[in-house]
Length: 381
Image 1 (cartoon, rainbow, N blue to C red):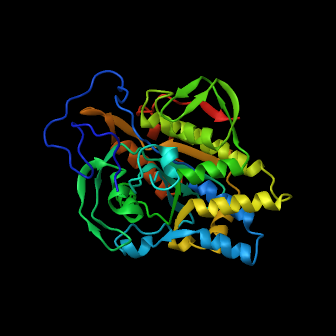
Image 2: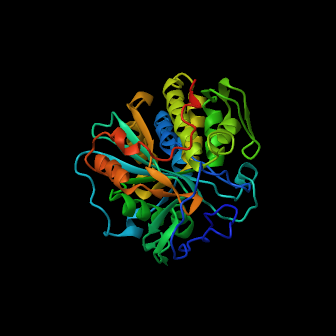
Image 3: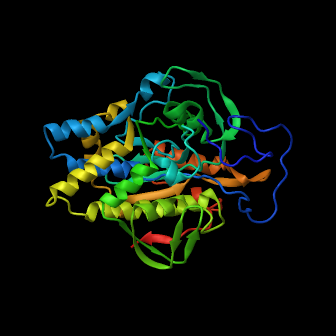
C-alpha cells in the first residue's frame, strides 16, 4: 500500500530515509503545495462507534446482521508484549485512523484509480479520562517526520525500522499493527483500542444522521474536494461533509494542519448531532445508522463484536462537545522542506505526560507551534 501523495523528487519515497546532510531553514510562511494531491480524510470513527449503541435494541437476525458487518484486526497478537504498560488510572487511549482505500466505491469519492491501496491520512489519539466524562483528542499530522519502529503486521510479516519518514508510512507499510506500534513508540502511551473508518462509510453515516449543521465564517471553495460553501450556516449532507474534512486548499495556509483544524471543528458538530438526533421513536432510522456504523468501522479484536462495541460506546455517551478537548500534536514546519513538519519534542512531551497522568493538556503545550491558520473558520451550527 502507499501513503504518499503526488511525488516530489526532493521528498523521500515511501518508507525511505531522508538524505544525510544539514537542513537549511525555509524563509517566510509555508508555501502551498504545487500539485494536486489525492488526500483523504478521515475523522470521528469513535463517534461512529458511539451511534452503534443506539442500535442495541435489535435482536435475533438483526443482531446477527450487525455482528456480521464488523471487521476486526488482532493488534495484540501482532505486537506481542514489547509495548508500554496499560494505564492503571482508569483512563483509556484509542487510536482512530481514517482510511482512504482507493478500491470499490471509494474511487469516485477519493479520486485516482482502483489500485487496491489505502492511506491513513487522518490519525487521532482519543484519550478518555477516568470516569468517562471528558476526553482529549490529539491529531497527528500525516506529514510529520518520525522514526518508524520495526514492526510485525497482522499477517505476521516483519517490517524493518526506518528513520525520518512520514508518519502515515507506518500504516501503508504494515497496516493497523504498525500504525499502533509507531504511535506507541513516539508517545510512550499504550493504545487500548483501535478504530478505523473509510470515507465512503463516513459519507453514508452523515447522510443517515440527516446531515450535520455547521457555520462557516468565510467562503470555502476547493475544486479538489468538490466543496463550494458560502459563509454562513449550512446543514451538510454526506458529500459536502466529506468535502469539508478533506479540503486543504480552500482555507488557511493550504496545509494538512489547516485541514486538521476543520476536521476537529466538524467532530464537535458531529458529536452534537449524534446527541440531539432523538432516534428512540424511529426504529428504522435507528437501525439504518447502526447498520452503517458497523459496516463503516474496523476495530481491534477486543471490540470486534456488537456486544463489545456497544459496551465501549456506552462508556462514551456522557462525553459531549463541551467536554471534548481537541489539539494537534505540537509541530513546526521542517526548515528543509515546508511540505513536512517536525515534532516539537519538549512541547509534545507535555502532551504525552498529561495523558499519561490523566490530566488536562496544558495550554502552553500548543502555544507558538504551527497551526494551519484555519482556527475558527468552521464551528457547530
